[in-house]
Image (tube, rainbow, N blue to C red; front, side):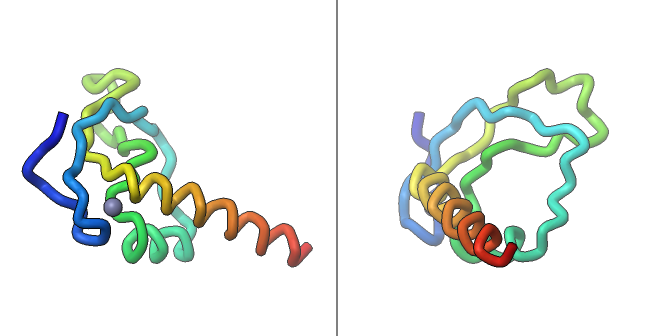
Length: 87
Ligand SMILES: [Zn+2]
């Protein structure tokens, strides 16, 4: 299903998808936060449940960009490798 909204990074129509709801998973990594904002703002690997957790169930619909998901997957791979090399 396509929406009229587009990803401003990839110029790709966002798709309405079922996304797992993450409860109690605050995003604390500032590097990841910055990368997400710049590179994959619509990856939506999960959505925040927050205070309406009980009413949302395990999945919620979110607008997702497929290219953003690819970008996040690639970024996580690179990021993980860099961190492993530091140890
Ligand atoms: Zn995108």
